[in-house]
Image 1 (tube, rainbow, N blue to C red):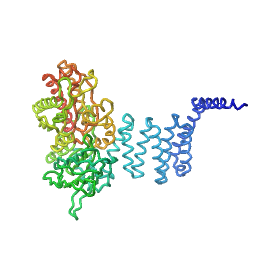
Image 2 (cartoon, one colour; image 1 turned 90 degrees about the vertical axis):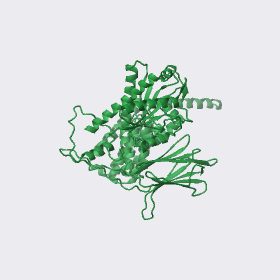
Image 3 (cartoon, rainbow, N blue to C red; image 1 turned 45 degrees about the vertical axis):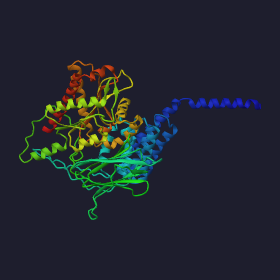
Image 4 (cartoon, rainbow, N blue to C red; image 1 turned 45 degrees about the horizontal axis):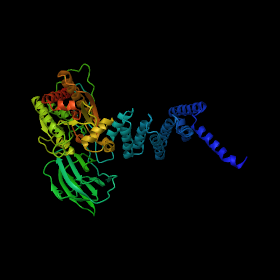
Length: 601
């Protein structure tokens, strides 16, 4: 062969190799993979039932290797993710018999590889859930379990493990962290039902030091303000900074011997206290006793919060401006955390006759009804935006003005129905988003209703929609939340991750029920009863700042799109706003009737 022919031959070989690599797996190989996987699957289940053979380690390792071989033979085949899942299951079963933490860690590794290599596969959420169980029950790593569950709640909302992950995440609340979960005493079966009191929560223990992932750089930030709202069972403290900064915090329990109360301190890196921040402030009301600010070392601002009592707390951040938010509840809190109940109760087809409360028990029943959230007397209405925050402005509509007008109409109609109505604002003033929910918590409102007007880049979009707090499940919900939160859509995506802890303690199902009733009644009243062509955009969920941390059913309504000329004209009509307010109030009344039926039972 001549030297000149060699390059041509080399290219021909290269082309043949590429073509071979791109060819599909031959049918025989696919059939072989199928046979190998199913053989390993049958052996796994047979061994699980054979108590004698299941005692021997080599039997489990042999089956595990068969699943690994299936994966290695064709890492991109449809059997690859299933093989990784069952390799994890096999090692989990082995660990349950060997009691070796190394076996459980190996199982978690298989589930982790499944999640990283096949993030969209239908078995991935199953693998993450199994990993969470192993981390929780076998490795006692609750932080890792939460990460696995968060991944399901964030990335697999349509999967079959979503609600199981939600329930397991809820059960982790209070385990291994600075929260203590109160458990109700079981109610004994008897001819006449008895009301059991919730068990008192155990003392809250010291937490580890939590550090944010943000790295502070550039010129020092300013701790602009430290503000708070407090009552006898709830406190919200907000630390507002001039820019995003790194921070860390720790909770410290009461030390009676040393005369020290419950404390939570937050260290803000590369920051100095601003002019509005006092070094020491005594709080006269609520569970918050004192707020102290100092500089423990150069470049660090420390805020120390002293509490008279603490049952649980939560720390999270908000953007634009950057804020660190601390929510604290006390042992006397009568939220859903004090009494564990199912959040959804099916209505029986033929409800039994109301039970007659024995004399001397009415006070207990009244307390339980309040603890379960089955009362609805006080409603706080929130007019979106205000003051320096005008909201959206199109076609002669300024959101801050029309939301204020609308809440006054709604408030008047609610008062006519016998409700006690409170407002976050009655004038054109600015109220920070996180302060609005705090007002409702401090005032012990039974419902929170936030009113807004929508906008879109397209003037063709129109309609009425109602939101409750949860992960956003559509691009349009992300867009609306980004606009109302005054942040970018990317920030909303980042927020979805930290929201999981917050939403687990919110009245999520109750809020969804309320949203559905308001949406149904507004559309029925405005469109069917009065003939307005209002589009039904349905009930949606999204991470709205203004709803975060609410201890009562809370929803946000978007009255319509002022960017749509026709809808803007309707929103300017007093008659249209009256009809829409009538529908909102009808929805609230329908919700009250619903919970009254539960209370009567």
